[in-house]
Amino acid sequence: MSKATQIFQSSRVRALMPWASAALASVALLTPLAAFAEDAPPTLESVSAQLTANKVGMDTIWTMIAGFLVFFMNAGFALLEAGLCRAKNASTILAKNFIVFCAATVAFWVVGFNLMFADGTSFVGGFSFFLGEESIYSSLAWTPVPLDAKFFFQLVFAATAATIVSGCVDERNKYLSFIIFSVLLTAFIYPVTGHWIWGGGWLAAAGFWDFAGSTVVHFAGAVAGLAGILVVGPRLGRYKKDGTAVAVPGHSMHMAALGTLILWLGWFGFNPGSTMMADGGAIAHIALVTNIAGAAGALAATFVAWLMLGKPDITMTLNGALAGLVAITAPCAWVTPGASFIIGIIGGALAVVAVPMWDKIKIDDPVGALSVHMVNGIWGTLAVGLFAAPAYAGGEAQPSLGLFYGGDASALLTQAKGLAAVGAFVFATSMVVWYVLKMTLGVRVTEEEETEGLDIHEIGVGAYNGDSLASRAVAAPPEAEAAAAAAVSVTQQA
Picture 1 (cartoon, rainbow, N blue to C red):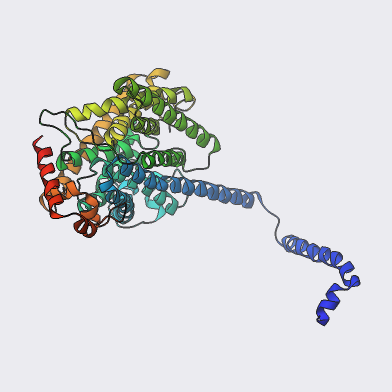
Picture 2: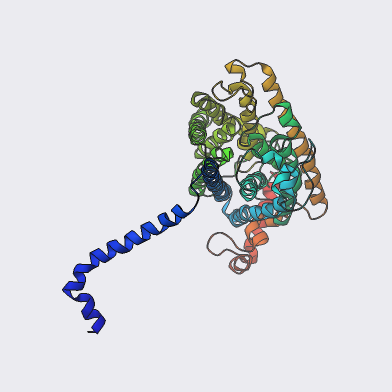
């Protein structure tokens, strides 16, 4: 035993240790107090400045956390889409939902954010590259958070719009064409209509309101996806010659259900986060009405599907929840819980009724994205003009009272005009981009690639059992390939 250890363990030293610890603690406490006594006493201005800094910090933390939740919706979309489609295309769908955020990040950072929010005209924001000085984004001056936080939160919204397009063209769209379209959508198309509404553009000046994006994100993304569906065309064998739709079941309801729950969680960032300030009352209210609408949508879709199909289809339940969430996104800050229940019920029912409507005109939407995001983007936007309540609306920085709460039809008409304008612009520009891609790179895989699966041709590896083009070539004899080709031919003739 060393000499130091012997001293430390002696009874006399051990008896003195508590007093020594107390003395050291006193010194530690008194030192900053002494230093503070030498400084000037705090003033009203310094205290106010510190409180402001603390509030900005809290606002920033809340905005970033909400942005993280919206970012996590990428996982929800990936699982939902992959689950509702066939196993042979799962890797491609997962890859698209991963790469779309990467493409959107670069495109929105380089030019899209400025076109949407930088000072410009009533039609489009400033055309410049990368993030500029805070002073040029006067349309975002209402929130005190730093510019980096504003950009990140708006980025995850732009990426969501592009992700909606993915679901519309799943199982037959070329991977490279989708990436290029995503870049152009988030760099130019989405920012222009976003500027009209959120960037201080002409629709905002006309009295159009969309709190968290039923029109800006969901409707616009779905319209761009509709243009893609029309150019790419339906999947092989999806419709018979007489126009009858042939069901193409998804391969994993586990993935679809988990993806929907993740999306629902993400909506608590999507809607309440759009306050971009740590306003406890507003955040709690928006979260409440968001949740009620999602639950009501799921219930309505379940029972409407039960009546129409004879069974409570799980895919309808899942899309019903998403429909209710999309519908409440525009009016969530200005409606009562009771109104949110009605909005969700109608939204869920619309999602079910819309599915056969699209099939009648041979619009092949593999995951129901149009029924959820387009139909309910419209419904949610119109709901502002119907349900905006006196407790939350009627002021200068709020929408006019809804038709059901003492307002007149002018607010509803303005919402409808805004939908028409956004729909026309996004559809026209998206059609141009899709057609240019079709005439150059091509937008659709070959019949053979679609039949065998996009995974082994577009991505090179399947989602299950290490499936790949090489392994399939070894495992499948020529006779099997010939039989598969013959089956495709029969399906096309049908």
